[in-house]
Length: 448
Image 1: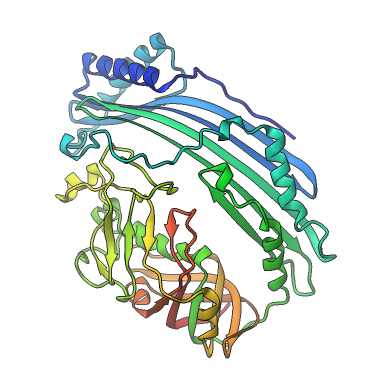
Image 2: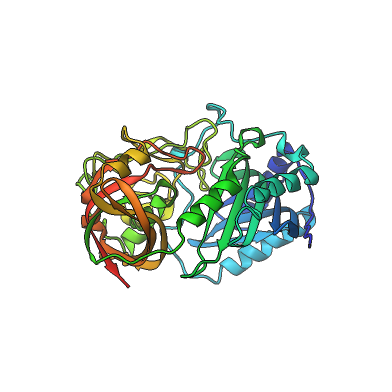
């Protein structure tokens, strides 16, 4: 068991603003044309229990300041956790002096103030004020309860581990051209992994639950579900290579979105590393697919009033009935591409759902594969060609027949998403990507 603690000056929001204003003013006085400052605090706990023994106990209390400097068309960013006023002023002066050695970049500038969050707005309810008062014993008990749901419940179990984690974050941001904003967020979760022995290997699986609020966290059946999922993976078999109907479980469907998210980034567009260049307002997927970036959801894990540059958060479609509507463009690459910045990061990505539960999707297949995990692989950002290892289950006449592994899914992202024929109704609302299980047809699967 070990404990790590890092303590610095603790400030309330008003004190953070006061210090941020002081640092910004000093940066301008010392020769910067523009500057933005972020002062943050983060408190977190991580507990791991392995086979009913506490394996690690970590507690961290951190605070710090980061500053972005724009000096004579040159840009740099710096951070420190030493927040004494005298030390900070010297830190800023030294940072400005070092920035002068850099190469000029005409596109470096703070965002247009018209794009900033201007204050006010609806309370997004992303902060649990009670979380900080939960004692360590209660957190350990939660992890122990989750573990005990699986521990020694089957003689084939090799090990069971459970994890508890939480975080409390507060931040204030001030920019020299007018932005002022503060935000707070909490997060708490439980996670259980199970490893077992069989004649053909050592299957393992997990289950996780998370929430912004302790009282809303699902605290039961986490270990039970992890065990059930592991047992189902016992003694997998290979299947013949070919084209299959494929269901991708909601829990792992986000893996297939990662290449798309990267391709939507302004940096990827500018560097010609995106297979979605020039595709705005054109079909990029089946008309079944609609995805909205929505930062306004009450208690959403990705909800926010502004992004990390201060840009006002706005609900907007990303893909609508298969048509690409918008990219993720930050201020810097917006200037380089001649495009209006709308945020270089996602908030809550919400997918339109279908009417069927996962069980109904499975029951609808005469022959197919239910993918529950991805193992390695990659996607070429320029072409969209991809290949991933998969694990899951073979489906015949609407029923799961046996586990499947040592298979690859291959294709090209520019064609693959047109094979989407149905979305389930089973989104996980406590995740930033609210995606249901997905049903594709004519998918290439091959044996390893």
